[in-house]
Length: 155
Image (cartoon, rainbow, N blue to C red; front, side):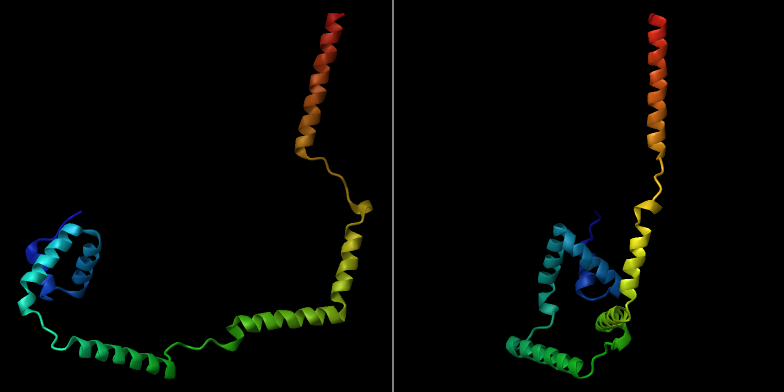
């Protein structure tokens, strides 16, 4: 892992870096304790040049009021596009229920069940030998021929 030097952290604290570079530095601070110590050292050195809050309580209240105002304005004028009714889940569930009721009333399901009954008739089912069963049968037949050969040779 590469570490940043003290001068680089001074540039970061003084806001002399591009936004993309600042993001890289911030990500690095999450994973590097050594650089975090350097950063705190630079902040401590630059503390007298950084702006000082005269009344911290008023600052906090002002920020909270702005957040509350932005939440109210979002509720009044949301930027989120509304999903059309035909793309909502309730529309699809309602449509499925209506189609099910329609098919039940017209008797489509009853005709399908009677059709399935004729397909599953045991007379219409043909028994097909599987490839595995054929191989096993041929193997046993081959082994039987060896047995008969051995019996004839042993006589």
